[in-house]
Length: 170
Image (cartoon, rainbow, N blue to C red; front, side, top):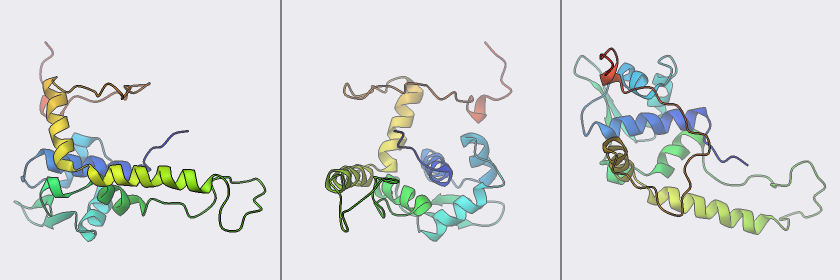
């Protein structure tokens, strides 16, 4: 089973991570799109939704752009995910397609909801201040993956940062 974000959630988290990584500097949509590999035609919708949910503020004009509406330590991963994807929770039985003779719950209902509640709690405790710190540690090569956390089974290939594009290879 894969527990991953949908496209809107993925792009929203990437956009907020980019903005939080730039420590209070307004970011243009095209800069975010290029740095985080988000389709530039789709990103304005993502950013508008984040502004609507009070996560970002936007300013028009040559010196304008997007910035966090509050400090990164006050913006949770849960807030961004739910702004993009809606509330995390169960609205139907997880045993889809089979007979369900239980009106209000099935034998899986309670353990599954407890697992969802644990996920929601963890996401609510994770802030973009913490994620920004992890980004800096990863870039510096000092980030240590917790011992109880396996690495990705299949690593996601990443493009070089925009600042190194066009730089001569060493």
